[in-house]
Length: 136
Ligand SMILES: Cc1cc2nc3c(=O)[nH]c(=O)nc-3n(C[C@H](O)[C@H](O)[C@H](O)COP(=O)(O)O)c2cc1C
Image (cartoon, rainbow, N blue to C red; front, side, top):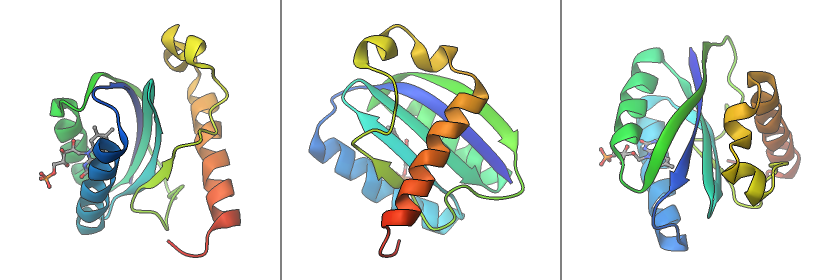
């Protein structure tokens, strides 16, 4: 199974754009056996997607072409044994568990973060979701 994390710059960020992305993501991901989480803020998206390698490659190719964001930048791509978000077609984290301020994001904090730091951020989101979930 493949797991990938990228960051990007939202373009035209508002509630309805975000809702549209999440509806589309959840519908497609259920079909494609993909799970993950999307950190969404006016100044940054950071997304973790995981699933069969072919499906992940196809999704990332679509994401690269999407004009609802720009400057898509791959942060991490690896083979994993276990999913981090097995119960979530696409969890959204809108009150980010991110430790970075907007100024740090603008200054490239995510590009500078190590794969371990990024993975740790998503682990915190997964733990929080499991603790607070009443179901997917
Ligand atoms: C930040 C962001 C995250 C996205 N995440 C997903 C996703 O997890 N799954 C997905 O299928 N599409 C996702 N998309 C949308 C894709 O870029 C693309 O528009 C969509 O997959 C095409 O779906 P369609 O064939 O149903 O039109 C995302 C787009 C953005 C901007």
